[in-house]
Image: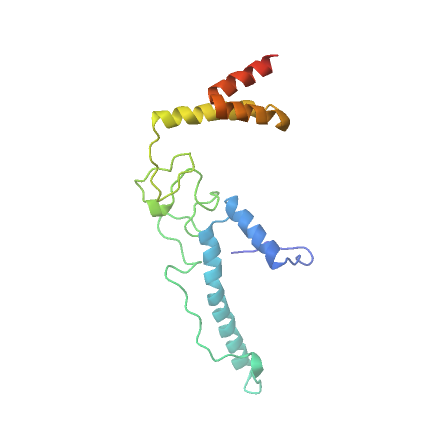
Length: 189
């Protein structure tokens, strides 16, 4: 991936700052978690490439160079499964960045289900239902109670904290309907 030229020295960031920026980029879908994983997995390959280049330089320099403490006799780090990045594009793909049409932002588009849900799966409902958890249907009584609670909360927020206690007492003793009527009457005055 070509990097843009930077004028001057690049700023140094703490690990906490770098972690925050990476989290923000993932949250804003400017970079996908898959891309982050790919970059991390490329580190081993890049180290192997640099070690191979260093070895060729040592051989070209001649036998008089001693490797010193920095040389390691470890086996090169193996790359994970999958096609290595930078390979030629497949049929129907434009040259350049593999796997993504030009102009398309990284990551999964909003509203699309993750690949793990399969092609035929529908997007989860916009109620925050989590994948893997089954949502149980609510009864008409529960729905009515929730709507009544919503009306109660919407009204009670319009009063200062000192007056809210009296409405809570009314709701507890006489019911939320009575408290709602009382609040509506207070607001009309």
